[in-house]
Image (cartoon, rainbow, N blue to C red; front, side):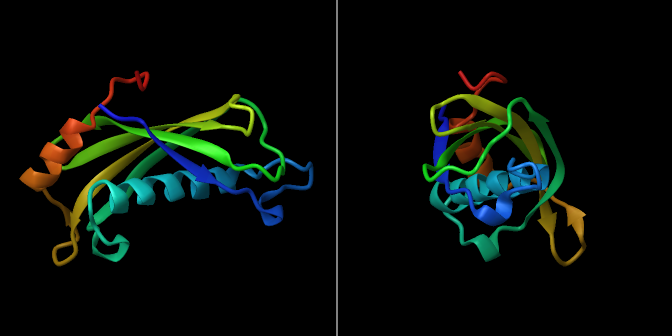
Length: 137
């Protein structure tokens, strides 16, 4: 059971007119963390991963502002199904304050038929070794 911690830098272009990180940019931060886990833990090349995002939910708890220190995106596998699995996340600011929680449902996808497919057995086993409960504990 593993929580992965990925540091992500904020950019000036991430800001909205109020000086907050724009809500849409949070999805970029989640993608950075998710792809890092897929490539570094599940052992794939980003372009060879036959998976698609089916659903993503974000709860905004505190605003992020532009700072020179990176934010931390904590992510873990929170559910493994037959053809899909979930990542859960916590986004922490530079002082470790929880700013956002999120969840992404990822579906394995057959590029030929454009239909969902079963998670391959070896990938399913690897996902299960990293499975966390709903709180990330």
